Image (cartoon, rainbow, N blue to C red; front, top):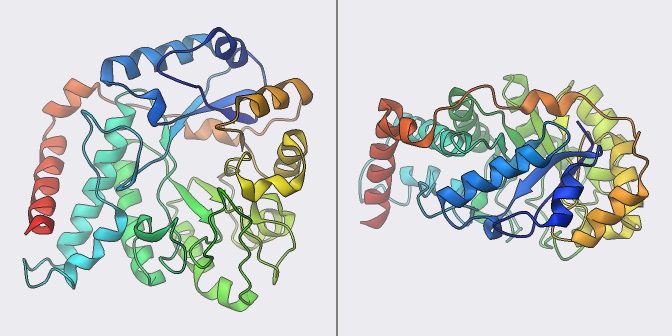
Amino acid sequence: MGPLMIDVSGYELTHEEIEMLDHPLIGGLILFTRNFYDQAQLTDLIKHIRQSSRNELIIAVDHEGGRVQRFKQGFSRIPAMGSLYPLQTEHRDKAPVSLAQSDVWTEQFGWLMAAELLAFDIDISFAPVLDINGNSQVIGDRSFHQQPQQIVRLASQFIRGMHRAGMKATGKHFPGHGNVKEDSHIAMPIDRRSRQQIMSLDMQIFKEIHQQGLLSAVMPAHVIYPAVDALPAGFSKQWIGEILRKELGFDGVVFSDDLSMQGAKHMGDIIDRVKAALEAGCDMALVCNDPASAMAAIDGLPSNLEVSQRPASLKKSHSLGFKQLQQSSDYQNAQRSLDDFNLIMSN
């Protein structure tokens, strides 16, 4: 399995994309909204991707729920994670919802999100977001809560649902993107808090969820934390090698965030960025939304680049077809929960 994850441009593969997928460096592919028209088209596209690739790819998507859900028509609309906990407070006057009920629903929504994607031969969703809902507008209600302990509580339930469906979880954005205003897609965020603040708040979330054995992968933030290292976390041997691997004892997969984002560009050209991410300890580097950079990485990197075997552990092991899934009692229970949730939120 190669160390690069790329994307494709539309509903069908182009000749150039078919050639790229046959390259030994390609180990993954991420899908976006532009790759989805309807379920039949998505099925055909994924089948063609699998047939065209030299390696057994990890196929991924950002399908968190709320405003980050790439496929909508025919798929369940998963709530924004930030809407799950306020049921206990903001909406108490509308319909009492216990913490226990919220936990059940959160687990079911994690299952539902994962089960639907698995039915289309997609291995992973890059979820859940473990960032604190703080200063960052790009995070906002993608986060479960403002308080670390509530994030741990709800995210753990969501991941258990993913696991019950057969999907591994990717926590992002390590060690925390919630306390910077800048969006790393378009800027270079700098989190100037002390090491102690970062470790006791943001990092505690990753630590506690990892200690439960729930995290199979993490995605570092394109954020600089000067109190720890001058490099962004995704390019930092200190963050990945020392803190994540040694201090936390994490031996799962580390994905870079998209290396075409603005928060990565000061590391040099795309070849420099990929090398820096892999040398820092990332197992797979994402190059998305920039076909020229993806091609440059393929052409410019040695084809015998040392490859991590960790990403292979994220391959899905089983799934029902979508029609079979819809007929299952688990699916029907999850749909009833989603209807109940939506009814409360709409009143």
